[in-house]
Amino acid sequence: MSENEVEILERLFATIKSRRGADAQSSYTAKLFAEGNEKICAKIKEEALEVIQAARSETDERVVSESADLLYHLLVLWASKQIEPDQIWAELARREGVSGIEEKRSRKK
Image (cartoon, rainbow, N blue to C red; front, side):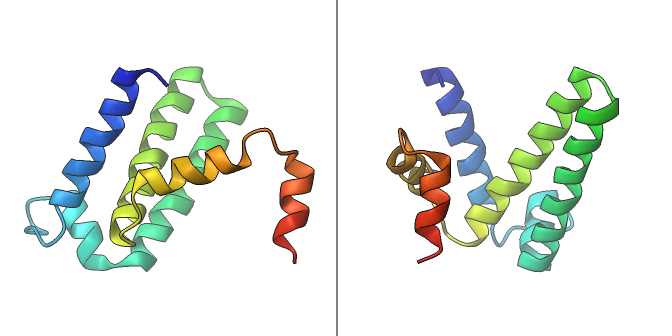
């Protein structure tokens, strides 16, 4: 990712975190926080299915749009769980260069 792309994610995540405890009537993100992790997880599932559907039978533009929705809801979940994106990036860095097969095998222990 370029620096600009990282900055976009950082700004979006900061905005999402700032909505915790905000008025659920005026902010969709605040409403998700108020409804809790079950609702956030349901939205992630819904958006993931929409990405799959778009990839199977719709345009690339729909895949992009639905992917953005999925990423947004994933960021909401991270904020809800007080997980910082840096933690995710560190885990991805840890896995870099490791065979996916070997990495999955290591989880079963």
